[in-house]
Length: 212
Image (cartoon, rainbow, N blue to C red; front, top):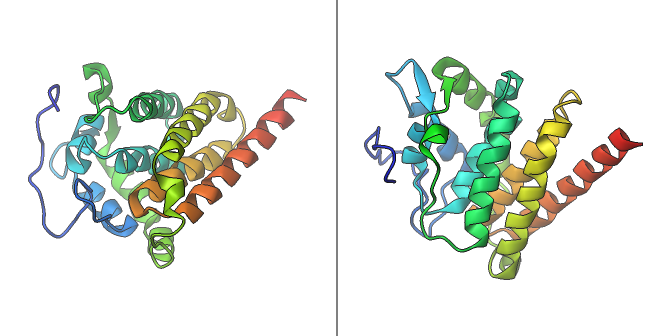
């Protein structure tokens, strides 16, 4: 990326960049993110994107989804920051950009290193469980027009996040939806796309409940 320098060298033991056609496991992705910013006191969005790469949109969305699922959403402003990030990622996926771009101010957004690593470690058991069931299937749901549908649904979920923040733990559903959409792209698993669409239905139900 042009606006931020690489902050870590590639580690062969983790394959979170997913720049190749072989999808990395969800648990390996988490392990890689834990290694980011080992020395700095805080970790920036730029550090995380350097680690996962800027050419594959699945991992970029997965990053947002996992943070939305973690206790980090309890930090004021995180839900709004995730929402903006997801919209930027999804719009660029929608228009077919080859390389992901973020403005410098967004790249400099920081989270405490300790809270990040603790939150990611909490997700390992779930990631290990999910990895056992992922495989390429219904792959037509993960490419072509369905990639555009994924991008549009992620934008809609992101727009809902500031409102969902008013309901305790409601953004966990948004995080689950974004994580599932990301995994469907990485693992080319159309069944996960359908699951993500179900989470979107749950978000719609929550919004209707707030409005009525």
